[in-house]
Image 1 (spheres, rainbow, N blue to C red):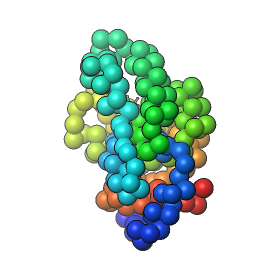
Image 2 (image 1 turned 90 degrees about the horizontal axis):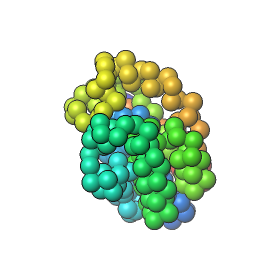
Image 3 (image 1 turned 120 degrees about the vertical axis):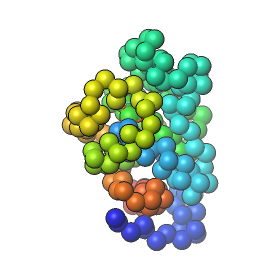
Image 4 (image 1 turned 30 degrees about the vertical axis):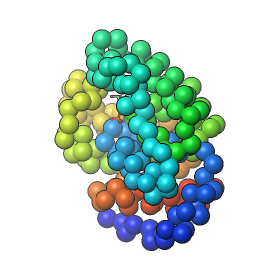
Amino acid sequence: MTAAPSLTDDEIARIASRIDRPVVLVGLMGAGKSTVGRRLATLLARDFVDADDAIEDAAQRKVSEIFEEFGEAYFRDGERRVIARLIEENSGIIATGGGAFVDPETRALILEKAIAVWIDCDVDTLVERTSRRDHRPLLKTGDPKEILMKLHGERAAFYSQAQIRVLSEDGPHSNTAKTIIEAIDRWL
Ligand code: S3P
């Protein structure tokens, strides 16, 4: 496990004051986007929003129900609209669902108006973390490890277009949040 960057509260506040756009977390299911996002928002004293929760609020249905009743293409349309709205409304931290940044329009919008952070993670850790809950429709269609390996292979080329990449290791999510703050500081 990599040690957390030793940032003081003052250093974090100084970095936060330079962040003038939303920070959008992208990456595969189980990478920790929502948990890390909440930590990041607390550290930077910003709002946090989870795009999947916002989609569920707008649709008044669970993500799994949207996939089941209307299919993935319909979900992606709604996801695109909701993320565009969140970016307009929000200058804090936005966690996106794992497929959002693969959509060309959503990706272009995020890259133009926000700072995209790819939380990368090894597949075994993703398998372990996603096995704790069973709400993800894409992981119910076969062996989760095979699906995650396939998605990792297919999506890495898209995720790697994010301005920032950090590796989420099996340590506390606050380490990843601090690593992101340091990486944003270097990037700005
Ligand atoms: C998806 C990831 C999920 C959710 C939907 C589709 C994907 O979000 O948006 O099930 O295509 O990878 P999380 O990455 O938050 O699990």
